[in-house]
Image 1: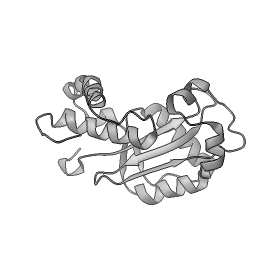
Image 2: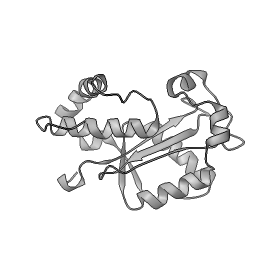
Image 3: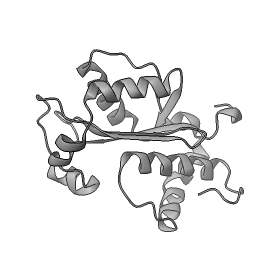
Image 4: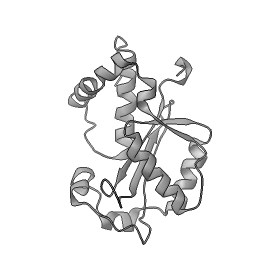
Length: 171
């Protein structure tokens, strides 16, 4: 990753649960310039898996999704428009890749951006600092809401802290 690409564009998804049958319910990202996007995703009629433990983590109910979620087609189109040509990084690449694939397959679109594993831009030393740095940052900020755009911002800020630990003012 080139220094000009820092901070990286980061994406995060929340889902109905984990494993087989789970589907994306919220997507959020933060761009290098700090611009953010977040949207709830209205489940397709055949997306029925629901894990109460996932709900207790992100505090998004099925009722909220039905009343406030956007159709998958609108969310996929917005992602393609705003992320076109970019590489976006995820700290939960395997799950996020699967959920993004499900979202785009549902509306018969292909992403215009590339999803990449965050680990690809971290050295072994930086990766070893990841969890303690993220935990320390969370302990000193008000960013405890487990939602997609907040998580994307936390991930982006953690990247900057592990890459540039001596730079003050990184939140």
